[in-house]
Length: 217
Ligand code: G3P
Image (cartoon, rainbow, N blue to C red; front, side, top):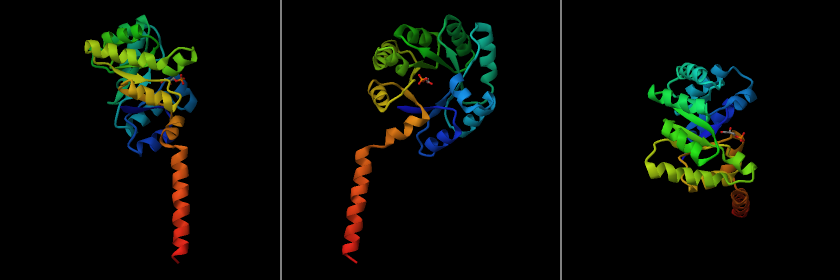
């Protein structure tokens, strides 16, 4: 499973990248707003840092405008992926852009049919939002499982990015369901490698070792 970071925070990206765990980055307008920096500047800075795809989202919703914006964004760096919202105009844009060799990430996917449409239109990535589905009292992981099955059934090449991940369990269940990628918020990453029993184990080993050393002095 590839790990993408769902953030535009340079410190968070560097920290995870230094562990060799950052295979890519995803952003959206809310994530960019949070950093308060210029959109193009922050995205190109991330593209230089990361040896992997970096998603930057269009901010228009009309087909012509989206395609124009996407063509411009795609020139910012070699590893750019243009994020396109899942609408009729978005599908048309994905279809046009994929024919031009521009990589796309079709975002805001909440159903199997939306994912299937995006994959057939030629999206490089499809992003189901599992946390937001759970927020509605439905089952986000079920959607990941179903989408994986549908892509496999028909040999569709899009890769699933499990997005809107909020908990360790979301990540674990996405991996079990066979999601190709998980995009993980920066503040969740640390929780993935820590466990109270690991912390306790280290503390206990250190205590025993220190007292053993004292005894042998
Ligand atoms: O990748 C999509 C993500 O940024 C949305 O997450 O937590 O706002 O639902 P969230």
